[in-house]
Length: 231
Image 1 (cartoon, rainbow, N blue to C red):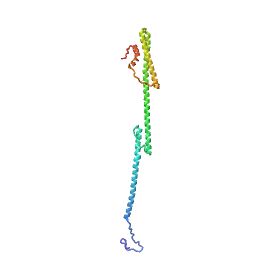
Image 2 (tube, rainbow, N blue to C red):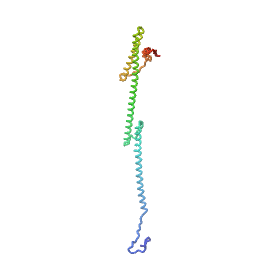
Image 3 (spheres, one colour):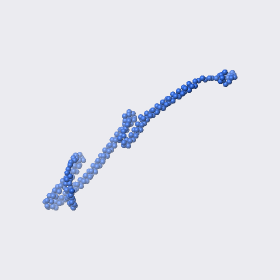
Protein backbone atom coordinates (compact mmCIF):
# COMPACT_ATOMS: atom_id res chain seq x y z
CA UNK A 1 0.00 0.00 0.00
CA UNK A 2 1.76 2.99 -1.27
CA UNK A 3 -1.08 5.48 -0.85
CA UNK A 4 0.10 8.54 0.88
CA UNK A 5 -2.91 8.65 3.11
CA UNK A 6 -2.41 5.12 4.35
CA UNK A 7 -1.95 5.23 8.12
CA UNK A 8 0.56 2.35 8.12
CA UNK A 9 3.49 1.21 6.03
CA UNK A 10 4.39 -2.12 7.69
CA UNK A 11 1.48 -4.23 6.52
CA UNK A 12 1.48 -7.94 7.35
CA UNK A 13 -0.38 -10.94 6.11
CA UNK A 14 -3.96 -10.79 7.28
CA UNK A 15 -4.02 -7.05 7.70
CA UNK A 16 -6.82 -5.23 6.05
CA UNK A 17 -5.26 -3.03 3.53
CA UNK A 18 -6.39 -0.33 1.19
CA UNK A 19 -8.21 2.93 1.32
CA UNK A 20 -11.58 3.35 -0.26
CA UNK A 21 -11.73 6.58 -2.15
CA UNK A 22 -15.08 8.14 -2.68
CA UNK A 23 -15.17 10.62 -5.53
CA UNK A 24 -18.76 11.97 -5.20
CA UNK A 25 -20.09 15.18 -6.68
CA UNK A 26 -21.21 16.84 -3.46
CA UNK A 27 -22.07 20.11 -5.22
CA UNK A 28 -24.42 18.30 -7.58
CA UNK A 29 -26.11 16.54 -4.71
CA UNK A 30 -26.47 19.77 -2.78
CA UNK A 31 -27.89 21.45 -5.88
CA UNK A 32 -30.38 18.61 -6.27
CA UNK A 33 -31.45 18.95 -2.64
CA UNK A 34 -31.85 22.69 -3.00
CA UNK A 35 -34.03 22.25 -6.10
CA UNK A 36 -36.22 19.77 -4.24
CA UNK A 37 -36.55 22.16 -1.31
CA UNK A 38 -37.43 24.98 -3.66
CA UNK A 39 -40.07 22.82 -5.33
CA UNK A 40 -41.56 21.89 -1.98
CA UNK A 41 -41.55 25.54 -0.85
CA UNK A 42 -43.26 26.57 -4.11
CA UNK A 43 -46.07 24.09 -3.72
CA UNK A 44 -46.49 24.95 -0.05
CA UNK A 45 -46.67 28.66 -0.94
CA UNK A 46 -49.11 27.93 -3.76
CA UNK A 47 -51.31 25.89 -1.41
CA UNK A 48 -51.23 28.66 1.21
CA UNK A 49 -52.13 31.22 -1.45
CA UNK A 50 -55.01 29.05 -2.65
CA UNK A 51 -56.31 28.68 0.92
CA UNK A 52 -56.04 32.44 1.40
CA UNK A 53 -57.97 33.05 -1.83
CA UNK A 54 -60.68 30.60 -0.74
CA UNK A 55 -60.93 32.35 2.65
CA UNK A 56 -61.16 35.77 1.01
CA UNK A 57 -63.75 34.52 -1.49
CA UNK A 58 -65.79 32.90 1.27
CA UNK A 59 -65.64 36.08 3.35
CA UNK A 60 -66.73 38.20 0.43
CA UNK A 61 -69.49 35.98 -0.95
CA UNK A 62 -70.81 34.26 2.19
CA UNK A 63 -69.73 35.73 5.50
CA UNK A 64 -70.34 39.39 4.71
CA UNK A 65 -73.77 38.81 3.09
CA UNK A 66 -74.77 36.63 6.05
CA UNK A 67 -73.74 39.32 8.53
CA UNK A 68 -75.56 41.94 6.45
CA UNK A 69 -78.76 39.88 6.24
CA UNK A 70 -78.58 39.13 9.97
CA UNK A 71 -78.47 42.85 10.73
CA UNK A 72 -81.34 43.55 8.32
CA UNK A 73 -83.45 40.81 9.94
CA UNK A 74 -82.88 42.38 13.34
CA UNK A 75 -83.84 45.82 12.01
CA UNK A 76 -87.05 44.45 10.47
CA UNK A 77 -87.91 42.72 13.74
CA UNK A 78 -87.50 46.06 15.53
CA UNK A 79 -90.02 47.67 13.17
CA UNK A 80 -87.83 49.22 10.44
CA UNK A 81 -89.99 48.81 7.33
CA UNK A 82 -87.92 51.13 5.13
CA UNK A 83 -84.72 49.07 5.07
CA UNK A 84 -83.89 47.33 1.77
CA UNK A 85 -83.07 43.61 1.57
CA UNK A 86 -80.12 42.95 -0.80
CA UNK A 87 -78.92 39.73 -2.50
CA UNK A 88 -82.42 38.62 -3.53
CA UNK A 89 -81.26 37.96 -7.11
CA UNK A 90 -78.60 35.45 -6.09
CA UNK A 91 -79.23 31.84 -7.11
CA UNK A 92 -77.85 30.19 -4.00
CA UNK A 93 -78.69 29.77 -0.32
CA UNK A 94 -77.89 33.44 0.35
CA UNK A 95 -80.50 34.45 -2.25
CA UNK A 96 -83.09 32.14 -0.70
CA UNK A 97 -82.34 33.58 2.73
CA UNK A 98 -82.68 37.15 1.40
CA UNK A 99 -86.01 36.30 -0.25
CA UNK A 100 -87.24 34.79 3.02
CA UNK A 101 -86.29 37.95 4.91
CA UNK A 102 -88.11 40.05 2.30
CA UNK A 103 -91.23 37.90 2.76
CA UNK A 104 -90.93 38.29 6.53
CA UNK A 105 -90.62 42.06 6.07
CA UNK A 106 -93.75 42.13 3.89
CA UNK A 107 -95.69 40.18 6.53
CA UNK A 108 -94.50 42.53 9.28
CA UNK A 109 -95.62 45.56 7.24
CA UNK A 110 -99.01 43.95 6.47
CA UNK A 111 -99.57 43.05 10.13
CA UNK A 112 -98.65 46.56 11.22
CA UNK A 113 -101.11 48.03 8.70
CA UNK A 114 -103.85 45.71 9.94
CA UNK A 115 -103.10 46.73 13.52
CA UNK A 116 -103.32 50.39 12.56
CA UNK A 117 -106.60 49.81 10.72
CA UNK A 118 -108.06 47.94 13.69
CA UNK A 119 -106.92 50.69 16.06
CA UNK A 120 -108.37 53.39 13.81
CA UNK A 121 -111.66 51.48 13.51
CA UNK A 122 -111.76 51.08 17.28
CA UNK A 123 -111.11 54.77 17.82
CA UNK A 124 -113.75 55.67 15.22
CA UNK A 125 -116.28 53.38 16.91
CA UNK A 126 -115.49 54.86 20.32
CA UNK A 127 -115.76 58.37 18.90
CA UNK A 128 -119.09 57.50 17.28
CA UNK A 129 -120.40 56.05 20.53
CA UNK A 130 -119.28 59.15 22.41
CA UNK A 131 -120.94 61.40 19.83
CA UNK A 132 -124.11 59.31 19.97
CA UNK A 133 -124.19 59.49 23.76
CA UNK A 134 -123.67 63.24 23.67
CA UNK A 135 -126.34 63.64 21.02
CA UNK A 136 -128.87 61.50 22.87
CA UNK A 137 -128.21 63.45 26.06
CA UNK A 138 -128.80 66.72 24.19
CA UNK A 139 -131.83 65.26 22.41
CA UNK A 140 -133.29 64.10 25.72
CA UNK A 141 -132.89 67.59 27.09
CA UNK A 142 -134.39 69.10 23.94
CA UNK A 143 -137.36 66.73 24.17
CA UNK A 144 -138.07 67.60 27.78
CA UNK A 145 -138.06 71.33 27.11
CA UNK A 146 -140.92 71.38 24.54
CA UNK A 147 -142.89 68.87 26.62
CA UNK A 148 -142.52 71.09 29.64
CA UNK A 149 -143.50 74.10 27.54
CA UNK A 150 -146.57 72.23 26.29
CA UNK A 151 -147.65 71.56 29.85
CA UNK A 152 -147.23 75.25 30.71
CA UNK A 153 -149.10 76.33 27.59
CA UNK A 154 -151.97 73.97 28.37
CA UNK A 155 -152.14 75.30 31.93
CA UNK A 156 -152.06 78.90 30.73
CA UNK A 157 -154.73 78.14 28.15
CA UNK A 158 -157.02 76.74 30.84
CA UNK A 159 -156.60 79.85 32.97
CA UNK A 160 -157.03 82.39 30.16
CA UNK A 161 -160.40 83.53 28.88
CA UNK A 162 -159.13 86.34 26.67
CA UNK A 163 -159.39 85.28 23.06
CA UNK A 164 -156.29 87.17 21.91
CA UNK A 165 -154.20 85.60 24.66
CA UNK A 166 -155.68 82.20 23.88
CA UNK A 167 -154.68 82.57 20.20
CA UNK A 168 -151.18 83.61 21.24
CA UNK A 169 -150.89 80.61 23.55
CA UNK A 170 -152.22 78.32 20.86
CA UNK A 171 -149.59 79.67 18.41
CA UNK A 172 -146.86 79.01 20.95
CA UNK A 173 -148.36 75.60 21.65
CA UNK A 174 -148.23 74.81 17.95
CA UNK A 175 -144.62 76.04 17.81
CA UNK A 176 -143.65 73.76 20.69
CA UNK A 177 -145.34 70.84 18.97
CA UNK A 178 -143.39 71.62 15.81
CA UNK A 179 -140.14 71.69 17.77
CA UNK A 180 -141.01 68.39 19.42
CA UNK A 181 -141.81 66.82 16.05
CA UNK A 182 -138.58 68.17 14.56
CA UNK A 183 -136.53 66.71 17.40
CA UNK A 184 -138.19 63.32 17.04
CA UNK A 185 -137.63 63.35 13.29
CA UNK A 186 -133.99 64.20 13.88
CA UNK A 187 -133.62 61.16 16.11
CA UNK A 188 -135.20 58.98 13.44
CA UNK A 189 -132.93 60.50 10.78
CA UNK A 190 -129.91 59.72 12.94
CA UNK A 191 -130.98 56.09 13.18
CA UNK A 192 -131.46 55.97 9.40
CA UNK A 193 -128.04 57.50 8.84
CA UNK A 194 -126.40 54.80 10.95
CA UNK A 195 -128.17 52.03 9.04
CA UNK A 196 -127.34 53.63 5.67
CA UNK A 197 -130.95 54.29 4.69
CA UNK A 198 -130.28 58.02 4.44
CA UNK A 199 -127.24 59.83 3.08
CA UNK A 200 -126.31 63.23 4.49
CA UNK A 201 -126.82 66.18 2.15
CA UNK A 202 -125.16 69.37 3.49
CA UNK A 203 -127.26 72.48 2.81
CA UNK A 204 -127.13 76.15 3.63
CA UNK A 205 -129.74 77.43 6.06
CA UNK A 206 -130.61 80.79 7.54
CA UNK A 207 -129.24 81.32 11.01
CA UNK A 208 -132.46 83.04 12.06
CA UNK A 209 -134.33 79.75 11.75
CA UNK A 210 -132.18 78.29 14.47
CA UNK A 211 -133.29 81.00 16.87
CA UNK A 212 -136.94 80.24 16.12
CA UNK A 213 -136.45 76.89 17.81
CA UNK A 214 -135.74 78.63 21.08
CA UNK A 215 -139.15 80.29 21.38
CA UNK A 216 -140.51 77.57 23.63
CA UNK A 217 -137.74 78.30 26.12
CA UNK A 218 -139.30 81.70 26.77
CA UNK A 219 -142.33 80.12 28.43
CA UNK A 220 -140.15 77.91 30.60
CA UNK A 221 -138.07 80.93 31.60
CA UNK A 222 -141.19 83.00 32.34
CA UNK A 223 -142.52 80.23 34.57
CA UNK A 224 -139.31 80.57 36.59
CA UNK A 225 -139.55 84.38 36.67
CA UNK A 226 -136.90 84.89 34.02
CA UNK A 227 -136.90 86.91 30.79
CA UNK A 228 -135.51 84.81 27.93
CA UNK A 229 -134.46 86.73 24.84
CA UNK A 230 -132.23 85.94 21.87
CA UNK A 231 -130.06 88.93 20.94
